[in-house]
Image 1 (cartoon, rainbow, N blue to C red):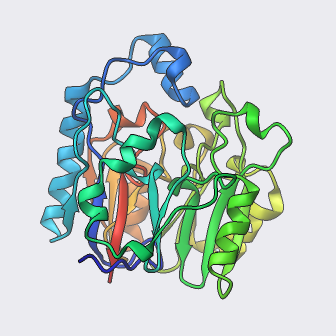
Image 2 (image 1 turned 90 degrees about the horizontal axis):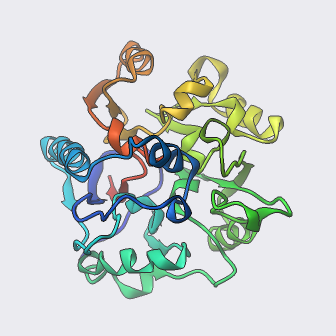
Length: 304
């Protein structure tokens, strides 16, 4: 059995689901794409090739093996993009939440049944239908849970709006003893530099008390300021619009001391090393073309 345990973003990782790029299918049409960055690359003829993405993900898997992490992979579905494991489920404490995602991605969840079968069924939670939520918007941080959302009246018009107000209230009800803090995110269906697809596209904690942050990803300045005050200005690495576009905030922590990052994130990686982190640099730029990176393609199960 798998005893789920996730209370933050950075404690020592013991077990994780890593998505797969195998059999990810043909290049989608513009109508089939879920985000503006993918659309940009479809139009430009630079959409990533499956072989390149498989190679990048295997490099990520090797880093996990180096640190003794148990790595689970989904069952491979024919012609199905299963890279972003964080979209389909997430863990808080000892509960796995089955995300209410776009209906045609439901089979991705069933492809992790080998893992689900190892979890106490009472610990697997399916939110009510009106609760829209994806793991990229959910960040447990000790006695806090940070959640990215969009509550505009035009919510339904945005393919990039993935977590609604009902989701915030649902998580609040599940964890009444925690501070659940929501953040309104900037959304765009057409401009990837003006779109925070998930909270982890503009914010992520690292170590024990530091964070990567992008101000323009937040619609409400007071909510952005809340995070600056929470972590402290000296502990914040502020990224610019181009760095947000490159997904600088979507790194992944194996422990409070070890961060996996894209090898081209020079400014960030240098800062992390200056703060005393070990930085495991890997190529992940092809996968980034789908507006997701290292955190998006992982779903942690156990942190010690």
